[in-house]
Image 1 (cartoon, one colour):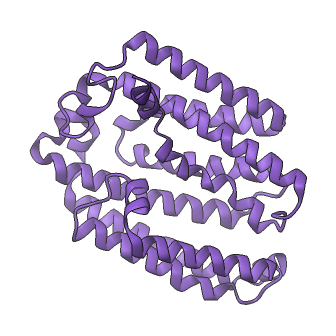
Image 2 (spheres, helix red, strand yellow):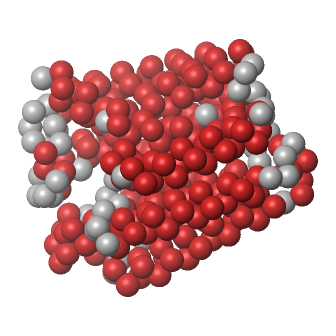
Length: 289
């Protein structure tokens, strides 16, 4: 059914590609037609590339997914989409992504190809290595941000790299903890790397990632060169929104046993949505008004 093919593409996960648009805002190019058009094409290209990677991942994991309490409902694992059709869908999505990447520019295309290569490496091997699996996910977020930087013709900030990487590590570790808590003693059977983690180990990693994420963003907000570049000395007023978002996410992980899908949490938790919306509105006001 068409709905199964759409489910394979996971359009709800495209919200992650919002990182592609962040450089457009922070480079003061939000109201410039050419950068906006390039950023829009870059966003669509990353959405298509992400969908190709999701299909590939589901295809590779189809056997183990059939034994998972939630993933067994995925179209390939459930047998609603055949393997040949899945391969054709992945190739079509990847081809569209590369075509759009070529339209944006050669440098952007290189970033997009790197994104696809890391996705392939993750699906075929990196997801079986402790910590490297989460680090690979974080690198994918950094590449999204880098793609946005190249698309709008801005410079890649070290702060953008650091804050994006730390935040993605935090989210990825939360996802691993949710999977471990959900599957319990059978975790290693569903995904080999989960058998090498423990709840206590992940709790310590999550605490470190949460603290460093808030700390890095706080330093970024007060850094003199950042104030000069952005044209505002009041970016520090956005720190409470970031702190609230991280702490709220911790609450959802530990008290509600959520975190399996950061996208689902973002779309389903009103306080978290309000915190993110407050950060976006405040940043827009400081940079443009």
